[in-house]
Image (cartoon, rainbow, N blue to C red; front, side):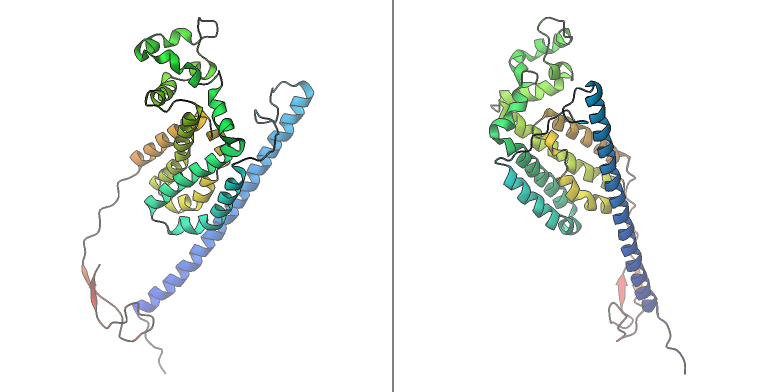
Length: 301
């Protein structure tokens, strides 16, 4: 008896099965690394909390109410609580499969949109008043918008009001950043979108785009698979509490897009497509391992 001859299609089928096993192994290894990273992050934060509270109890030299954060412990609920929980549950349940199958541009747009909704829901736990209040502080940008009635004159004398002891010194945030930041809120006011609510919405929408920028940067670096896996986490990024509503989210997005554009610019150009050539298929008619089932058919490849 003689063994049935092995065809190229048999070899291809075995190769595909081996590739599938390798893919599953890579996914399991990736999950283990993700788990180790998460555990490491929890331990690091726990260490910072423990050491920070010890220092604060000893001599109160950190000046923070909830080390390592400049914050206080005040759990409460509000208008945004139910939408935030519902959105988080939907992303956890549907986010990973959606991230795998969505076309790339649709995925980037969806991550931006859902991230903005998540950030807005968290910010609205304190209601619209609490949403707008942080940016209406006397130390924030909106308090200085009226001083830019003449933008040119304000910019020419900008540096004369930075130091605390200078006459009519700028508020903390205006003095601590280049004038482009305050000019953004001046522009919003000029087009009729003045006040804390509109400024907060600007910071949320622009700040949420940082998640999309991360995806763009990862893909430019050849890590589209990692970008798709990280998409649900980027949507539910815990740092959203600092984006809504704070100009810090606006600055984070500017930095993220700067890095994304740098990655795109540094990425190698895509290779030109190979010339198409006519190649006969290898299979004989009727073989189950044959992907086409045709005998000596040909195709452009």
